[in-house]
Picture 1 (cartoon, rainbow, N blue to C red):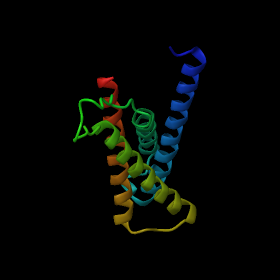
Picture 2: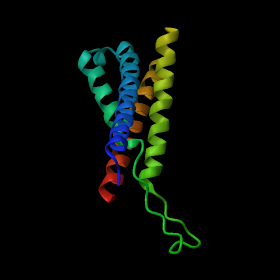
Picture 3: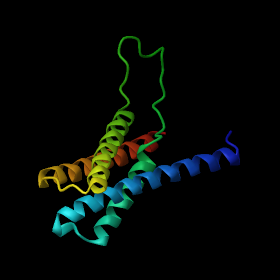
Picture 4: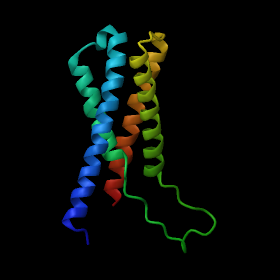
Length: 139
């Protein structure tokens, strides 16, 4: 049974992850918005931050699939939620890292790199949200 302190610590941890996702979304939104005129708005940056917060809150620390060693002898069942979460988290943080680098170094990358950062962020966060939802539905 979980105590109140453990529950509070878990919620605090998840809120910290959500803030990290929002910060990543902020950097990606600032970079993309500064290079693509159509996406230059506060609403776009806010949407990126909210999506990042939701993705990192749901997609990191997903409940794992219960492992039954007696049932799986030669083949092990793949935990799709865990795999999606890992790939999504890696992809979202990788492109956020590039976005931070571009913003901090004040470089002007080719529009293709900006589009790749945007697409990578959207796919990464979407994978996190799907993975977190899958894991919580089955738990």
